[in-house]
Length: 223
Image (tube, one colour):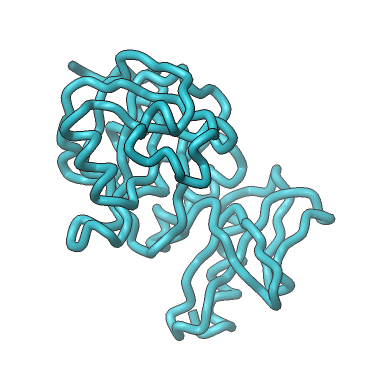
């Protein structure tokens, strides 16, 4: 079965081998209602991002499957062998899936990152080589991401950074070669919270001009 360009694909984190064994053996995945991304449960495909629990397969999407149906159930209904679990009464979507398919080559993440869900399209999923490619490229951040990639940089999209006890989420981040952190990049209103060292650009900025300024800042920072 082929993925169509306009299909909606949900990439979900898989961080426990027991959950993966259940997906393989029983053909379903549970998704907590209170953390479900917009559009749930009406996706066409479900893909799985493996965390460090999967050893050499970590930080990558290796498998995906067609979503064939869904139910709304409590965790107690889904996992009756764990009636005393602290989230036993919480509601979950039970997504029933078809046969697992290999994603070859896998979609990798070159840096460890915390992923819960990524919503993407069929064409981006099929073409993706790394996790950042799953994000759309028509927004200001998307256009700058493509420009930086073409210029030989390796930016991260939608990247969390923690500074002085505060966690920010920036549009783009570039690693510094001196291993002393990241260069955050924000394309939004000037009052949006961001790390003090962030480079800010207006959403309508020319991506080529932004890339030139970024290259200069990286050189000054030892990146």
